[in-house]
Image 1 (cartoon, rainbow, N blue to C red):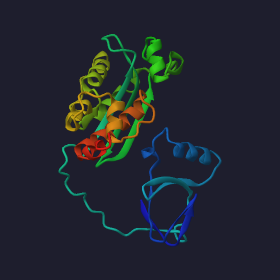
Image 2 (spheres, rainbow, N blue to C red):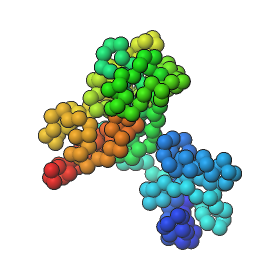
Image 3 (cartoon, rainbow, N blue to C red):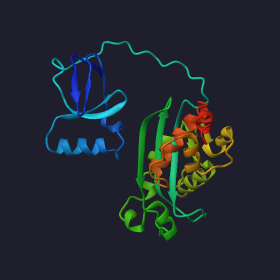
Image 4 (cartoon, rainbow, N blue to C red):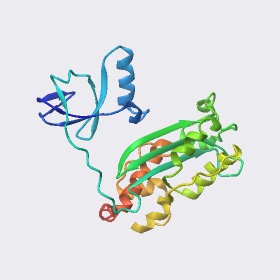
Length: 260
């Protein structure tokens, strides 16, 4: 729901003028790992009537106001977005963390992040029990050990959801052949086929647009000025992959590269 402030209102450390658009954000669209979601859960447990809103592109937590005093629903006719001329205006970015590279290795962390015209609209991730030990070198790289995945669901418990989130969409990944091979192997073990997608794109190959030959994800992020918070964790890697693809297809990369 989109509303507008009837009078200047202060949330946290900022005052917003009357007429500022306020978007009430459904909780299911808020990243389950974000601080704002944890704060919402804590406040709701205390019985506080709070909700998540987006003001000037930033998500904030606020006490639910009386609409007649503070907010009025905007009477605006929604317009369909203009047709995009970009190759992949909407796509899902995929990332996996695995016990290794071989045929017997398994997935222990997954993430899918959906983008629409460069805006993140959906993010899901989780740990699964790979059914085999996580090698020490992988544990050091990712920070995920056997103890972290003990008691987590098997991949089969999330396979149908992953399949559904990928099917019918453009799928992006950094080093796509690897992620596709490992994920497909998990599907095959369950008697499932690789979903029919609307296209597949590898950001490692697309990096040739800016003169980079098969860069690692962190190298590509540095070249494009994309933030990568925790490398080798599925959610942050998938999110960074999506932002890199958006930068590449918008031709923002050459300007970013001028300072290298």
